[in-house]
Length: 266
Image 1 (tube, rainbow, N blue to C red):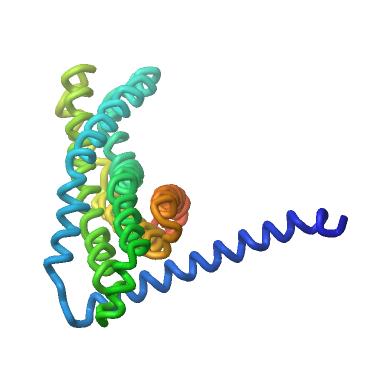
Image 2 (cartoon, rainbow, N blue to C red):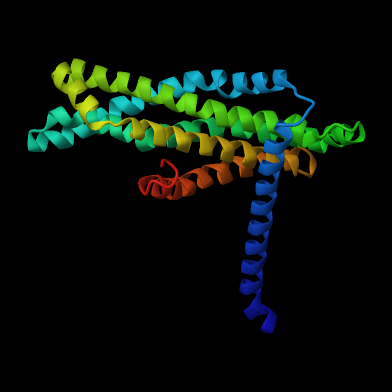
């Protein structure tokens, strides 16, 4: 009877302990990876390989997603502004939404599904086939060799992908707003230049860099600690995508709060 009463509390406590343990492990891995990236031996070819995989390899999906995000948001915004006779604000509204929130968050979620899952699957396969253990036997630091290039590449390429999302999203917005809805192009762009500040773009890029770190750390950590053969690799990959996606959405609130109060943006 007592065990039946205490079992929910025990389960909750275990869940909290697992969360704290995983959070601590991810934080330690991120710190170690950044510090080891500054120490020899340097392997720039690994960094460029990951930058190509994360950045260049994600360009198509970012371009398609960005274009149709800008296009559909223009349709919805114009429908709302038409009620007040303020269709000229459509472009500025789409630009602010893209630069502040939509571009960094949606680009991060796309990269998480594509690159974050690949990181977890690749490192998980290396773990269960004992390739990581072999690196340690050969005195090769697996965190420096495997994690550091992915972490640096994600932190560098995510702002680039976010900016790409902004540009292509505004292209889609312009084509729909001006070409389909008949908004005056001069009014469209004048309102964009008037209401969008450089700080809006800069804040979005800061978010994208933070999200890139989250994607790489979660993906590498789950893959690095995978176990149980092929099933364990699949489980680690699923957990990496889910945890990273939820972490992006949660951290977006806190980063936005900090940026709005000028703590990170100065």
